[in-house]
Image 1: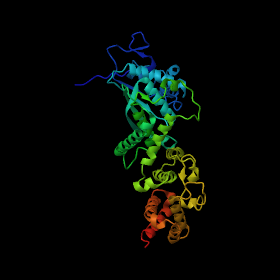
Image 2: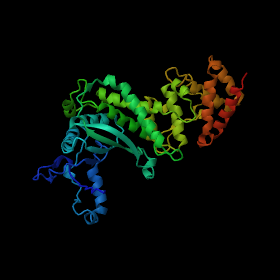
Image 3: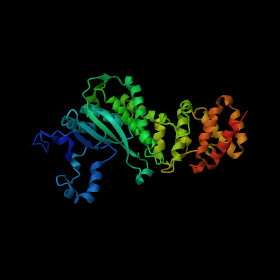
Image 4: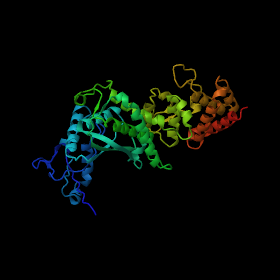
Length: 415
């Protein structure tokens, strides 16, 4: 038995079942599904974009959909990024929730790289009486020329339902739940990922972490003593401390720590510091052809690495990449203020540099000067094997990767 699905183009805040309203909905028809693609705070000006495309489609739309309008509705557009934006968004989504049955559903397309905007979205959904029940990151830019710029490649589809919960919780209590939800979200994305031609970048996984955090947070009707209406109406300063924003930002940090690069053992990965992880992961990004400046900025932010520029050979647009062992040479080794300088990864890189400029045996001798050489041999070999992988995928690592392979063999067979 087939069903007829009626799709109506409407203005969210003005929808009403009152027959005299600007966009009336018959009382007998309470739509079960609402699909919205809202403005992403100050990231996208939809009223301007729609006018650009209407220049091409304006004459054709009425032929296909006679009841649809061909106007950008610029005057009705939700704009801005602060209290006015949040107020307008709540007005729209609260109205949709009021016209949705208890078993109804909403699908919201949302993309933003700022934790503050996702925190605002959480407040907006709470105030609207909605909760996130599912979220998927859909690859949307994989075949576009935009892929070479500073852009996320996916959009998060949030599935919303009415929040009829009366439960409350404190944010501190939910941190373990958020972490588990983020890992579950990433696992589900990895399972459907195309191993030969990956659709998702690390930025997309971090974006999915935001959505996973919202899925946990919006389950409750109240979080501690956060006054939702007051928070929505308040104008915040740029550097103001906000616990909700901090926890959502921390959820994003779970993603890079959980995503172990191919060729690295999980036990080794967990034993490394944040800067070491950033460097190893940045090489993994580069091996996949990613030279976008924004990708490395987001990766550093996810790992909480502030001084990542010292590890980069270039940060120019579409030419960004981390330094090679030879480009590091002896720099940072004697810098006691830098976390990376005395790390195991840094010493292994210096050994590769010596092996390239002198000989693999000389590189091994440097590592033997380390007091923990015998204890760290297996980890050193594992790191060298990892660096050796890039001799085929990163042109700047062709010779150094080969030296890393030889050096790994020397140390592995050192009796």
